Length: 301
Image 1 (tube, rainbow, N blue to C red):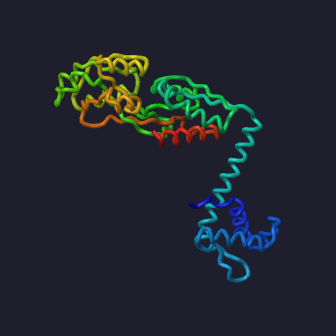
Image 2 (cartoon, rainbow, N blue to C red):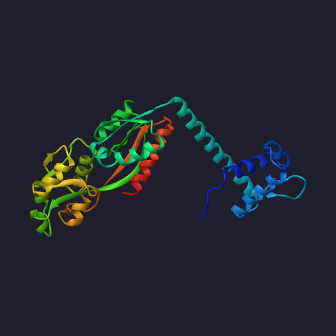
Image 3 (cartoon, one colour):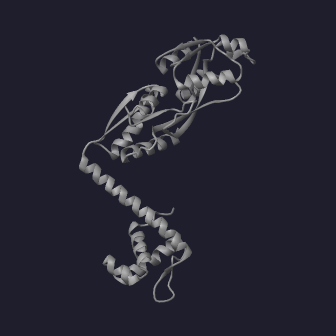
């Protein structure tokens, strides 16, 4: 395993490169010249290449050394920015993040992400406005929230940045004794006359599913809206309809055979979860940290 390069070594390297002198770098850093030379030599050994040509009176950067100088400056600048950001946070006291996301997200995602976030920023408060994806995005546009976690809409929005976090697949879930599970081929009429259980017809997920049906000239009419995901699963288990839900919500039920997934259309129905904020707006350290925690969380999904 390769360990990160020591920031002290980077700082000595940059000073030596800019002064073009080991002795001058040592003087400005209040170090001995042998200490500077040893640090540079150790850095070269760690990287497996020469950074300086030592022929002549003054050391000069090699081609790789010149490239590394640019990278070293960027790394040191990033570390300094992080230090300043932390100092500012400490001076300014408690902070608040205001964002919008769905009740589903609040139930399944946010608690774990919030727990990790609190370890880094125990004084930061969350203010969450529950909303389906279209409304959450609208709240970002209206500057009523800092950002949103939502499903990516079919029609793109101008003036917003949408960073993809992960994708999931929408399934058509039924009980093991649903009549359609015994059918090898399900007819167009059976698909269109079936009863479907869904959370909200005004949500992005419904529009994605509706478009997937329409692409295959299928136009179901019977959609029953239920406020809670748990209610949908229970009604599906009772054989009262076809549940339209992401597969991960019913992972255990599918594994145990309590629920089955029907193939009603030819292609998978994929939706994308995104982190949405206004274009041109710089994310704060708190928001950037939250975004990174979201990415890490969804990588495990």
